[in-house]
Image (cartoon, rainbow, N blue to C red; front, side, top):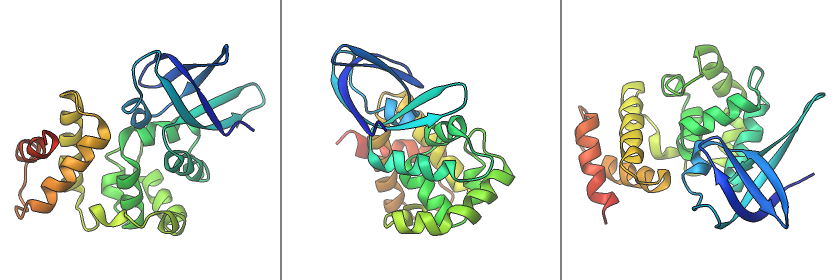
Length: 201
C-alpha cells in the first residue's frame, strides 16, 4: 500500500498531477483543495495517497493533508459515493466546511456542492455524522448557518479564489469576516469586500 509520496511536481491541473519520484512518474487524481496549495512545477511536494483498486484498473489519489485523505476514505464508505464523487465533493467544499455541514445536518449546504443531490446529502448526514464528530473539533465554524448563507459563503469563496487567493487563505478571511459581521442579510458582494480586508493583511 502506498501511503505517501514525496517528489518533484512535473505538471499539475485542477484534477490531476504528475509527480516524479526518483525517476518514476506517478499520476495522481487530486481534489481542487489540494491543487490550490501545490507549488509551481519543479517544486518538491509531499502528497498523502489512497490507492483505489478495481478489477480493471488501479487509481492513485493524492491529498495535501492527512485530513483530506481521511475525509475521502470516509466519503467512500457512503453507499453511492465512489472515488470520483469523493474527489468532486472535496473540490467543492473545504474539509472544515464539509465536516460542519455533516455534523450540523445542513443538507441545504451539502446540495450546493456540485454533484450532490438531496439523497446523497441525506446519506452523508445519516451515515457520517458520528464518524465526522470524532474528527471535527472545529466543526462549529458554520454551525447554525442556513442554506442561503452557505450559498453566499461558497460564492464568496469562489470569488476570492478567482482573484488569486489560495483556498485556505480565502477560507480564513471569510471566517474572520463572518465573525465580525452582525448583518444577517449579508450579501456576496459585502462578504467579499469584508474578506478582502482580512486577506490582504
